[in-house]
Image (tube, rainbow, N blue to C red; front, side):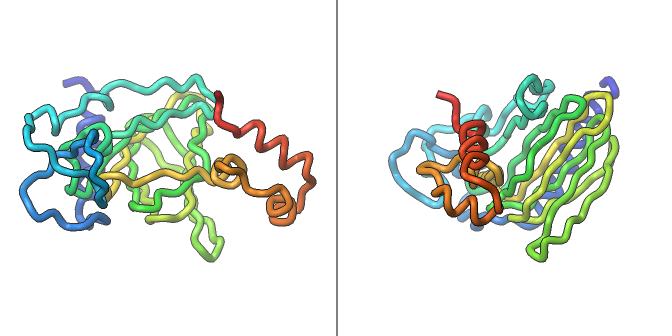
Length: 218
């Protein structure tokens, strides 16, 4: 096994084990409950399907780096219940995040999970903000770990000159992600301009400009 694959394996093992110590999801009442994503039954989670195979517990999507040729220069590849239906009721999921030099995973929250990241490659400046508006930030390097408490706004940015990557673990099968800027300026329907101008002490023209830039592409 080459060094890069070994690092990926170790990162996955650490992230998944640490994230699963305390699940944020309800306890399961049976061995497995593979999600039936096509079911119309509404539950806190997903209905169980009857015919299951080993493939329901398998996902190869974190093997290779994600493309980073986008606005933020970063890509999140999730491995949640939507990708691994066998995670339903197990209270754990993962993701791989790849960053180009200068790449940013912008301020966001995970309302249903704490996140723990293991650096596979490169170096990142990371931080989270408490409800007292205090920033806790640090530079983390290959082989190091950082934790983002559940529900708090956090970010990661690659200020280095080479690509970076992390494996993230979550103590929820579906942690959810809400980007701060998109939530405020690109909701549907949109927040009224006078609310935003008064909140951010800016003019209507700037609010409209931000809204247009963050609006979902049609």
